[in-house]
Length: 359
Image 1: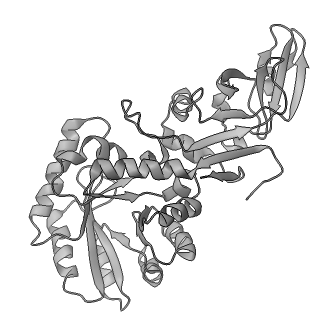
Image 2 (image 1 turned 90 degrees about the vertical axis):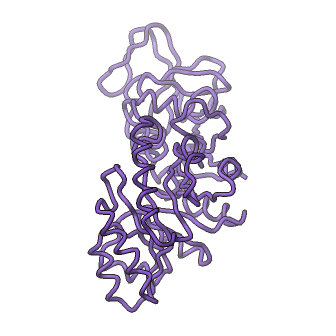
Image 3 (image 1 turned 120 degrees about the vertical axis):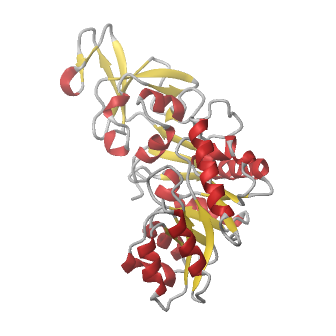
């Protein structure tokens, strides 16, 4: 849904996304970066993000769902797409028909693939301690790997795993590194792609991984990370709006649902055309927005389609308001306010907020 009538929009900086990609590429060289564009490129717009990166010569991407992969394939015929989530038996043929690489994380799926005539490309996933997806029985995984090499219609292109604590517990991450390496050492030869790191792993652990060829970078591509000492990444995502109506409250007047806010003096209130149906949930009450480099408080309960801020006489309807995404109110600030992580803030903004792309 593209709403061009309401003065609320997300500004997406495609150039900064590419610059963040270059940062990781230089950091990891000669290893390669796999841009992760699942969840609509973390809310940025997967079609637009992939299109821009493809124009810069990038041709390999990762998503979570087969639906996401097929959406990309409709637009881009000459890129490689890895689905990291589960693909059901009945959908393997669909993936093959669209030249999409799937993940095999259980032997029963591989047994089904063997019965097909279609050409199937896959990466083998090993569970090294995340206990989410992947083979826990490494002998069984090795058997699948070796058997796959015997079939002309099956192409095993990669082996990978996933860190559970790349941003924290080093002891656990080291254990996962050892398990992954032990599995790789058991293979007679390795596929062309071996990957373990996510964004935090790429920043903190990849240098110690001698056996990987790639790293999967998701949230770091979009200028965010759980690593507090990383300042080189550029912001890519800014939620903006303008005042729809200005209200003047007298001292003692109340505001909004539940009348949770009372004016402590004569006050000026800006009503913004954005609310929890857009992803600005009610827990954002008592936060701040940014106007002309200054912060202004969010007051009253956030409504489905509107919210309130307390302003001064210098602010007019013409002013651009940044709800988050600048130096005054960063995405990390909002994540802290909501007791969550930046990933969730990216994904909270709904499709009814139009994305405006900046290069």
